[in-house]
Image 1 (cartoon, rainbow over the protein chains, first blue to last red):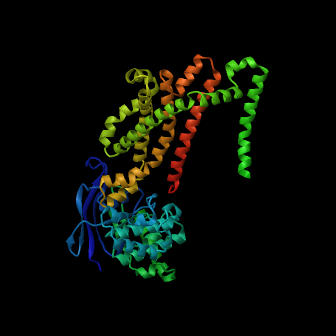
Image 2 (cartoon, each protein chain N blue to C red):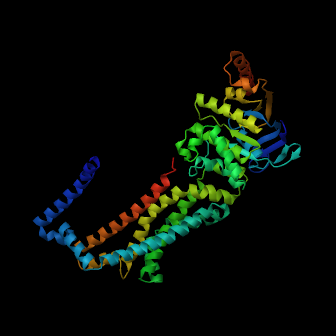
Image 3 (cartoon, each protein chain N blue to C red):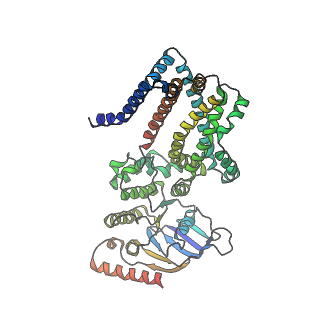
Length: 253
Length: 250
């Protein structure tokens, strides 16, 4: 199923003049695959969000390149952004929010609307489809913003600390939702988080960045089956804990 | 029942004040010349309403205020929102906007009357100038405070700057624009009124100036009451718009 991939080669970026002083990203090489969740960890302000914005094409790199290909064909990927705060449009109903991406890319059709309704249904949001976002809890809003990215037809899901404002139980549910969505939609998911437990639970690969200017400090592959990660099984937990320790060592040294 | 009680409680100080005022006038009839009296004002109000020009004057002032308000708010809001589209144009015009904002527009009243005559046009222009800058700054401030994530989102969906402008920037400035409208309603009324004060042929300001010439304090009060009534009417209209907009406010 790994038919989509995103390759980052020698990526450099600096704000303002490219004199090296304001360098944020320093020669990063990375690859990402579909049906894979990659988690980026690193010190605050090291340039994680900048990296996401570069991948999204909102910032233009000063050096290197980012290349997305689907079944070996190079093309422009569709980006689905999920922010720390759900960033729903308050004057649109939940359903209209979900359809926003399709509307802007002029893809809105009866079929898309049907897909939106069925996704809202499978996430238990049918009853809220015609409500305004302010009537939803924070967790539900975040769910809507993930559905919005899927309905847009995103190839790459960029998540910037998406669950950091939610409580423990809800966070677990949202993590489950994310795993399910990435599997079902065959997405490349790239997520930034500060929560190392969340990182090892959700990630297929963890990428640790250095201080600013960010470069790759270490890349780790998590070798626990996706289905088992959300379990509270003690053996799995032991394995997860070892990974957490490992990541935390990388970050503190 | 509770609401009725509250209304009665709210009316109480006003009624006591009016009774005290009237009692003082009854004890000291000479001071009515300076103070006027509630009964005298009521009398004057009825006679101006039924036999005089009160309605005509009030409608002239209202008309001037509405036209000044509509032209200033419409143009100011459109330009203020559009400034979001070009940072360069904004930087270029900013110093002039600051000067215009700092300028007490009413000080221009005499010149404007000199240019546009003593009729209603000069009052509309004063109202326009008084409301334009506020509307423009409010609209621009609202637009520039648009949630950056929403802008990134539209961009990530492949939307153009115009898409962001229409789908996000304009609607999210609505609260700022509405706040500006609230201020501008009194500004337009003040503009019309001050214009009439300086020189005019009709309107409540004209009525007040005339009454002052005749040393008729009660008639001055009637003019003031007329202005208050117009302002209250305008205010309730904005409340109506704000309630409509509150539907999706967090």
